[in-house]
Length: 113
Image 1 (tube, rainbow, N blue to C red):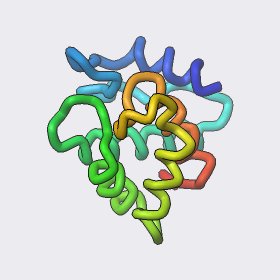
Image 2: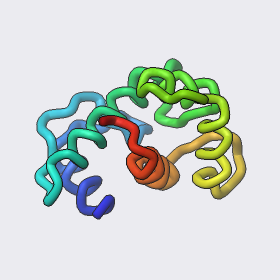
Image 3: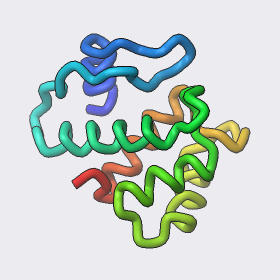
């Protein structure tokens, strides 16, 4: 499901030079659950705004800022949990395909409602 959404997003968005994040969201992708598309869009907007250096990768501080925007009660704990689950190469940043996992994780936690 997430691959289908990402493929649809990539077809309908302009991507940055070294980024997996959109510069501008043109339209919300069609999916079976429109609520899930809205959630994904809210999460992606919050992540984009939190990316202070605009490199398309997220360190712990940037992710914490995004989670505060999304209304997390314990953003520090949630960031540690997300990095434990998502940062597979243990480089201290979430980038590339890890962002897909991050979006899926944040949706499963109920962020973006």
